[in-house]
Image 1 (cartoon, one colour):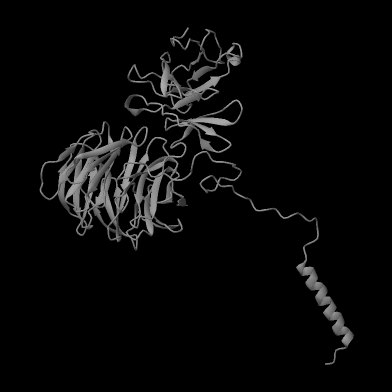
Image 2 (cartoon, one colour):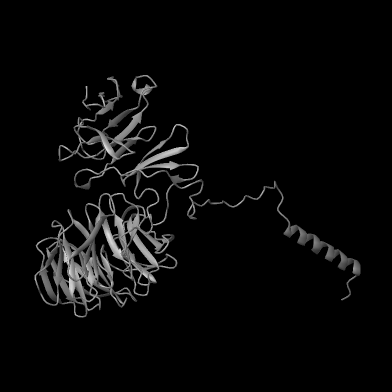
Length: 519
């Protein structure tokens, strides 16, 4: 059929107009394109949260609140840490840079697969996580807090109260159950070849199980609740610790000789670990010290202070040259130690635990902070670095940390208090410290119960001349969710002049710093 040229021209014209309309922006007001959010980095090259302009300290090897289990990957490239919040974090074992994080909360135990591609975590339900992506690969159909990978990576052992469940990794289905304990199981470990599983329980026994048959093949009467166990790499020795007795016991499984008692820790031991080469045994617990022992003889080699309150877990790197450790009760840091020199590989930059108190200097150029690591730090805000180091404030009886703190305006005086009433009279509730020397200035003993909050107030707000020094005010606060009926009180201490200060709903008293007596 013949189509006139003018019709073809009109059709082509309409087609061009339509194409232009489709490709153009819709009618209406035009808005400028919003730039993508830019995230600043800290002095170590790690990203800051949106809106933040600086980070004082570092995020490397800083897990978060209540860090507990840690483990090196068999290839030595990764370190996994678990805790209450956040639950799981995966780190570059060399640099401490955060690689991935899991969505789990309250991780009690974890273990890497032999090929380093998966990590098994348990926060009530054992779950497999892919190391490369941090994604969840699957869950095991059981409730458990304590888990372990078999050395061949084919079986997972999961505690379930008084029994152990053995499961296939490939199908995540149950193989068999191990029955025998009469109370909750606290720890479990495969022997190096994976033929035997050892379990420690609150029933004061350590039991050994044949993995293939599920039968109990040996038992040790511990006479104490068993908290931690570890096989030596040659499977000839087993180290274990109890709940009450701070001694570490070394059992010769081959010869059946009496246990060797390794003395040294002053309080409960929470973790023991053999080095992969079998030459060393490390332990950590209450008091914050790490002890190193000869892995064959049990002779103590050395010890050092790793944390202020306690060491939660210790773990050796695959080459036996590095020891990783975590603290408890608010410590967020994972600290790495060189075995040969005993020195920290990544020295702590900033606080290693939660920060309690902050105080800007009068000119706004400095900031003094104090946290659960019991260390006051003064920061140069222009450079984001610490000024000359200040000594840590000593903890109280049995390593008890100060839970309530306040700083004076110049950062040179620290007031510390505790939530609980001290059992020892000399361990006073409220103390004033010189942060430059770490020495106590005054111990104030008139609080009858625990101190929940502390703050320095300006002299003028306490009713004296503005040029005079600050006063420290402490106050007891009681959670409404708990039925405690102790009367709350507040007191104010002033340096050179006795005054009276009132606080709404409470009573206040003043005293001289010279003698610390309340008037």
